Length: 151
Image 1 (cartoon, rainbow, N blue to C red):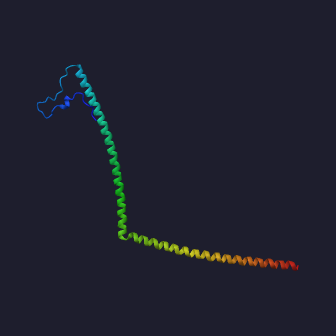
Image 2 (cartoon, rainbow, N blue to C red):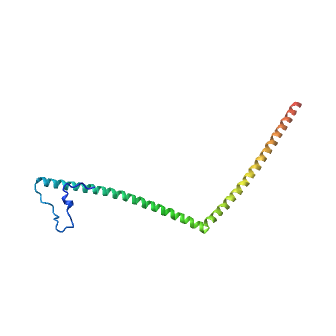
Image 3 (tube, rainbow, N blue to C red):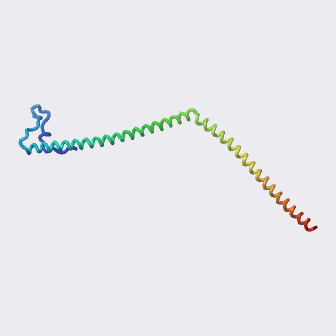
């Protein structure tokens, strides 16, 4: 992302040639000096731009690295959790726990069944008592009418 050089002589020199003069050419006037100043300014601008791009790239890469590290840590924790579950299954601990839970639920189910039978029996008894009450009330009303009719 460097700006193009106006004086290509600097780039076209053979740096491997020991006879080459690495110093800048002597300025032969104000025009050449202005060109060199402009070239230095362009190089400075290109260097600043290059540094800005590198900082942006480094920041982006750092964010990606942190994100990947977090993902790795999450996956490690998940893997450890699954390893523990697998060890539990292999040791039979999970089956023992399921059996214990089955016994608890079976006992609860048995108690619930007994309660349902008791409720059904009480409901039938209540219906019978209600029928008996209605029959006694009808008999009482009939007797009351007979007593009133005689008097």
